[in-house]
Amino acid sequence: MSNISLSAPSATVSLSDNCMMKQLLSILLVTAMLLSLLTSCGTERSSDTAKAPTENTIQTDKKHHILYFRDKDKSDKAVVTFFNSVTGESTNAEMEKIASDDTAVTFSCAGDTTAYNMAYITYGDKKTTDFAFNNCVSGWNRSEYGFLPYTQGMEIDYFPHYDHFTIDCNGYDKKIHIWTPDDYDPDAEEPYASIYVLDGQDDAYIEEEGATPKDVINIPEQVRSMTATTGYRAIVIGVSTYGDMVNYTRDDELIPDLGKMADSDYTGKTKRKGDDFARFVAEKLVPYIRSHYNVCTDALHTAVTGASLGGLESFYIGMQYPDIFGTVGAQSPSFWTYGDDAWTAYLKQKDFEKTTPFLYIYTGGGGDTDMDGDVTAMVERLKKLGYPKSKLAYDLYESGGHHVTFWRRFFSEFLEAMVFQHIEPLQKQ
Image (cartoon, rainbow, N blue to C red; front, top):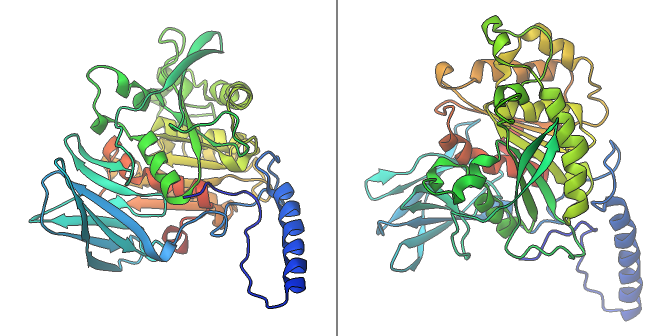
C-alpha cells in the first residue's frame, strides 16, 4: 500500500498516437505540479484552499472494504453482520477462513462502507460487541486481553512504545507522550499528520506495570490500521491532563470559563482554566511539535480528540483555533457543564461561514450512562446556529455508555473523519 499522495491523482489513458500521448502526459504533469502546490500540507488552511484527501489520493475501495477477524478460540465459522445505524438496514455474510496458526484463526469478508457503518461478528454460538465499520478499520481480534482492534499483516503490538518529554505549561512541567510509526522517517519528503489526544497519558502508560490493553483505546494500533487501509500516515501526541495536582487538576484544565455553570455545586470544584490549557496546546505545544517532528503544518492534517471532559476541551480547542485544528473528535463530551444560554452566547461569537473544523461527536444512549441528552442538544444547537452540515457528523449509539470500551470501538470514526473529512452513513441522516 502506497502512502497518501497530496498531489493530484494520476490518470491512465490508452492512445494509439504517441504524439497525443506525450502531449496529454505533459498536460497532466503540469496540472499535477500546480495542484500539488495548491494542496500541499504545508499550506495554511483557509476556507477556499486545503482540500480534503479524496478517493483518488487515498487508496481504498469503499464498496469492497475488507474486514478481518482473529479468533483465539479457533471457531470453524464466522458470520459478519453489517448494519446501518441510521436506517436500520443490515446484511449478513459468511467470512472466509484465510489463515490459522498456534494462537488464532483469521477470517475475512468484504463490506460496503458507503452503506453500512457498524458491524458485529457471530462465531459459534457467540457474538462480538458492535463496532464501527469504515475504511480506517483493518480488523478486530478476540485476544487474551479482550476484543481489540488489530492490523492484518502486521505484528500485533498492544504495548506500543512512546517517547516522553516535559514542556512548561502555565508554570509547571506538562508531560507529553509521542508515538510514531515503526517506519517513521524524520527526513521523509512527505510529512505526517498530527493527532493530539487529551488524556493521552492513558494510552501512553500502557507500558507501565499493571496496565492492560483492555483499559485503553489502543490508539496506536488503530492508527496503524488506518495507515494500512488508506495509506494516510500520522503521529500521536498524547497530552497529560492531570495538571500538577497542586495548583491545577484535570477538572481545572479541561473546563473552560463560559460564564455560569449549569451545576452550581460544581462551580467550586474547578478553576475553569480550559482557556489557558487550550492556548498552551495551540500556541506552544503545536509549534514545538511542528519544529521537532516531520509533520504537516496546516489545519487539514492536524486533529485533536478526547473523551468526557477531554471531549469537552477538544471541542473548545477546535472552536477557538479552527485555523490550527481541522478535525475535532469529541467522544461523550461533557457539554452538561453549561446550559443553553451560556453555550449559545459563546457559539454566537463564532463565524461558521469562515473556517470551521470537521466536527465528529459520539455519545452513548441511556441517559444516566452517558451524555446523550446534553450532546444531542449541542448538535441541534450547532445546526440552528448555522454550523456547516458537511462538517458535522454525530453518532448516537443507543446501547453505548460512558466508558473506554465504547470509545475504543468507535474511535475509527474519528480517524475516518480526519482522513476523508466525511463519514458516509452518519451524514446522510
